[in-house]
Image (cartoon, rainbow, N blue to C red; front, side, top):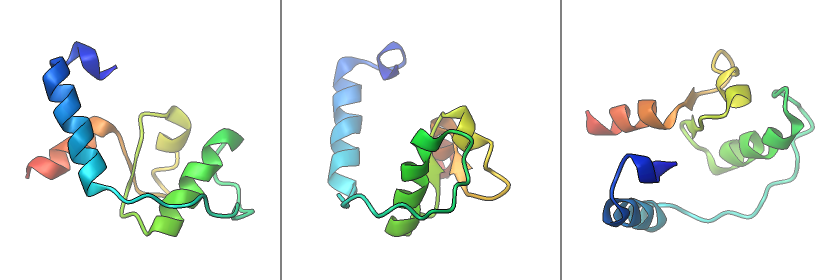
Amino acid sequence: KIARYVSAAEATAYVELIRSESAGLDDPPPSGQALCDDPDDEFLIDLARAAGADVLVSGDAHLLALRDRLAVLTPAEFLVTLSG
């Protein structure tokens, strides 16, 4: 999806930046407390909690619907927070 907004070089630089600033974690065990309407998204919530993430960044409608219970931003909203 990013290809329609930036050049290939910019996309590569962005991916490399994310890779250099991120940490890899093993999948945590399921919490057993389903928050999301889509069970396939639960692992993302569990992973964000296990990692101590301040915010979950996603464009997924099911996750965005949880904003009243969980800090979720779209990628565009997250980029705005980074810029200032």
